Length: 215
Image 1: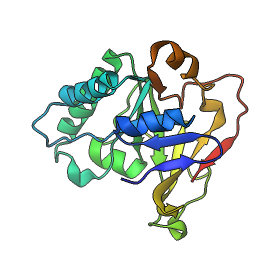
Image 2 (image 1 turned 45 degrees about the horizontal axis):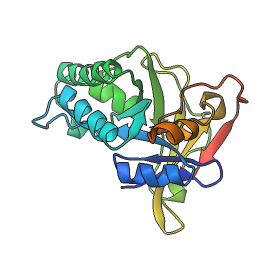
Image 3 (image 1 turned 135 degrees about the vertical axis):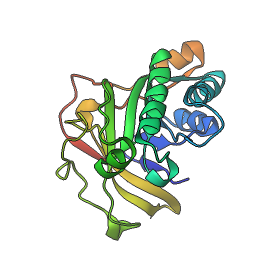
Image 4 (image 1 turned 90 degrees about the vertical axis):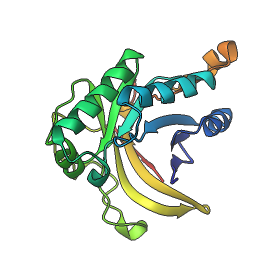
């Protein structure tokens, strides 16, 4: 699985691997977690969220935000209504656990899968990539963003995919530091031994409004 990370600003985005989260936290790296739903699985949307949340919790990880990946229309139902209901069930279940919810998608994926569903109280991490590798990168800023589905300001943009950094295959992302909450988790971990992840979008009002690039 490709990872996206920033060596300088200590932010790291990974998939659903608690061992990695422990390792990264020990190295002082902030972490975001994303979930790739499986619409055609025998498990319901609620069961998939439960499985993710319970697995992380029992692994000693406190999750503040989960990003739901809504891409690759071919992997979803052919029915827009079924897709909308499935996504709504995921978001509702995540919010049941008190989680902040973000969506990883872009205009084209979202429109094909949901026909422009508007989700209240969700953040956006969009992607715009022309192809794999450095030559397929789009601008490393939000200049190409156009609002859709009720999202007017993105939190994160993925502008590069399948690139090699220090012999590791990564995706590259940029985020607004104004959306980044002050580092959390270290003091709490000292008391509870529970790692805290998912701080992008939990706004720190003292941050400067500029962007940081994640290789």
